[in-house]
Amino acid sequence: MEVSTVDEGEGRKSQDFQTDNIDDQNSDALAVSEEDALRANFYALLARVLARPMDDDTLAFVRELDKHADDTPLGAALKKFGALAVRSSRTVAEEEFTVLFYGFGAGGEISPYASFYLTGLVYDRPLAELRQSMKALGIGVVDGNKEPEDHIASLCEMMHGLITGGFGSGIADLATQREFFNEHLAPWATRVFEDLEACEASNLYAPVGTIGKMFMAIEEEGFRMAAL
Image 1 (cartoon, rainbow, N blue to C red):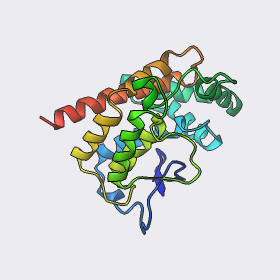
Image 2: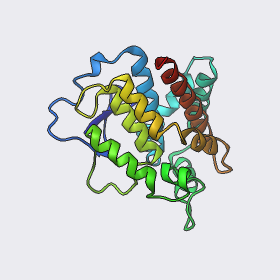
Image 3: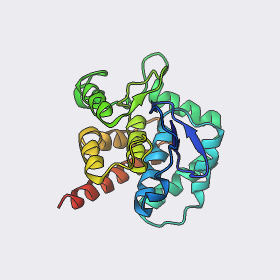
Image 4: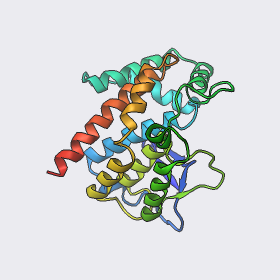
């Protein structure tokens, strides 16, 4: 399937999910409100920089965040991320990602999977529960994908698709988004972003942790207020 990234002028082929028999993946794009488009963009940013080491195109996009003028704490974190990217080569970015998430023979400093954070094991109950939700929502796994679906980047990509209608069944209503978020992100996502923010190996990726932590708090509060 095609999913929008933070840069709405550029399409990205999803490495994690696909839906079948969709003639127009972006048919609902114009129906997304400005507020929801902004939410989708944050999910897309997190998915884009956490799914794999940043390539030249992603680094170029992130460097533009150095020009971000929003003076809120979240805006400051975006600007810091951009400023660090300006000073980081692709090689440096790749090396930091490797240390954080892959490691050199002994695993990375962070295991970004819901199952690991919630049970201490990978491929455990949270992954099975997520797969049930994915099946109900019509979200399939692309052949050859080697990562468990409960990777933080994959879950952010799923939220992006629910908000934008990227899975072919139309834009998910707020209740569906809230249920998915509360079941699969709220119990652990803030913790992984806090760990990323504080991780000894984090430099370029430290503000990604800050952005993720703050955005998860905004989402939790937004869903809570919507349910009142």
